[in-house]
Length: 518
Image 1 (cartoon, helix red, strand yellow):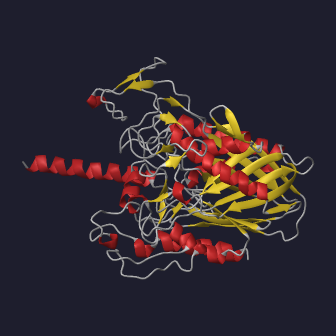
Image 2 (cartoon, helix red, strand yellow):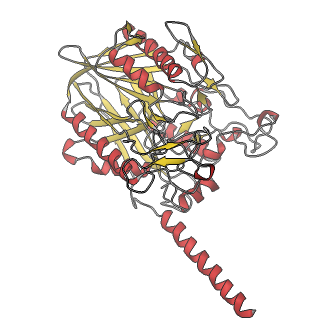
């Protein structure tokens, strides 16, 4: 009997050692010593040059599957089978990110992209990338930066995810189940290669340009957004920058910044798509159509869509109806018709704002302040997911992760780089300290971030250079009963956040980079 216990103890000890080694290996810092502390300012406007390019990052769907119980989730134990169309003896699945696990794509509705603008003021050059992905982790952003040829002379690169819930997983937590990553390594390599290729092409395309800034702050977009968590603070407003060829005034590209989760298609869709940003971009570029009839001319060029302050959560929820802007038909159920109606609405507001031309600049200048920061990693689920290799967070310090904040000034506009899904009350005000909160404190993140920005035009670029999850005011943090506002239901957000200190830490870091450019 003693021998049995001895061997059992040795086995348990060995298992603990093996698991510990696996966790420590997966927790390793994949970019040891990496840190940036960028600051360059140009206060002398000069001729601006701009170039645009895009590359598809769409997976090729080869294997399809048969849903035995029509629940839109793949489970072999429930009779689901796959069609081995390439005869390699395995299911080559691309797992759709967002909403839930076990959703292999059945096809492609519209391409997903890496779209790039390179801007040069004669003293410095930046690249701004809008990627159709639910998120792109900071380590992967660093990989892309390291691959950009030095001879392009790019001083700073920003990569922002649109946060579409209809593309393949590039983070890891939406695979077949909770224990298997949804990231296909070959697909990730393809995404990185295509993104770098788009940067190179955009840099080759630079030419003298003019900038047009405009915005729609009427609040007419409010009915298109549902704030699904109290306090109700909607991140309304569309922020726009159109780039014109200086020689002929033709549109080279347009940046659109709006705050709403690209998840109109909700949980049942099985087709790869960029969700409503697809329809926004198509309409801005090629015109707004009702059926086959063009109702509004587009601008030409290439459109880049950037998600804003979408935490809280800003969503085109199935409980709200989106009207077709031409027929008046209301769409509530998640369909591509609803998705197009939403995209068309935003495109029409954007085109109208740009026609009114808030400011046109024949010369401009670029300033950048960006820095690496190390927030605490308190989320137990994130620690475990990282430890088993589900997500590649990496820890350069003890239970701290590496991420980044930044501010880019282009003429009269400030573009704020936010590494996750920030709650709108942190940006616009309205933080509360409701009954049921976990910490007996008053709001810490005040005044709101917008009060620190003196620039005429403000762009809030969420999920930039990372996806750290939700950035929640600490006085609104809640992980157990009694629930906020004495509600009978728990809150959503905390389970996908680094921890309760993330809100005040990111707030402070953003304010610092803003003030450094004043």
